[in-house]
Amino acid sequence: EFVVPRSIPIIFAMLRKSSCLQVYYRILVFLCQGCVSASFGCTLIVAAAADLMPLEKRLVLPGCRVRYTFGSSGMLAQQIRHGAEFDLYLSANEQYVDELIRAGGAHASSKVIYAQGRIGLWSAKNLALSDLPSLRALAMANPAHAPYGQAAKEALEQQGLWSRVANRMVFGENVRQALRFAETGNADAAIVAWSLVKDKGGQLLPAEWHKPILQTAAIPVRSRNREAAQKLLTFLLSPAGQRVLAQSGFFPAPTAPQSRSASPVR
Image (cartoon, one colour):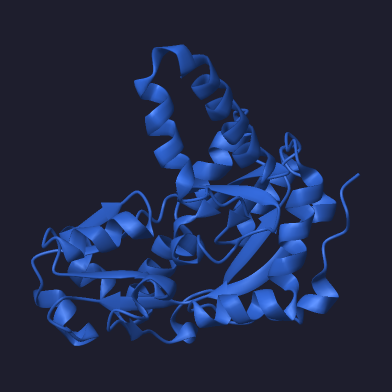
């Protein structure tokens, strides 16, 4: 990692005050910018489901700048199909990855299930599930394109609550926006990804209430940095990567990661 010495800002200030030394100032700025750029050997652009936002600072790749674009899995898949150039796609479910592969937008050999997600209930007043029918508004991600929204709806249906709250739903574009509705008081509670509320006093809902949320990844065909994308996938499946996921509220995928390793993309 490139570290700017404490003396550099002082030198810059001295040079800028002297008109005859401005040329040296410009040269020094150019050289320092080159040093910062050289500290990263590559840039990896990742399209990631919003439930992964708490991991942004932890899912890194040594020597490579990792830039994340967060959103709902369905919307991100649509962007990739329409030509968006992402190096790696981290979806919150398997369906959108499979559809993208069938559409020719991602390499089938790179597909891997790296974790299992869960949903949680959050409210500022620590409300219980039995309180939901009496709420003014309940937030969740739009089930039309967000896997966690689909799971939340399935859970409410399984508990016989959907018909009682359907007309009070507030849909977010993704789980982070849905949680924000509840945090700002625009909704009384939210059912979102457990990874977003595990450290905020959220209540983990039973996995049996909805279909498994299989966090799935693949490398898009337009990826310009497949080697780096493969390295990040390898890290996700490694014991260290699985520990990071577990600490952030994710659960092991149905089968061991070692048996699901993605094949290198050529």
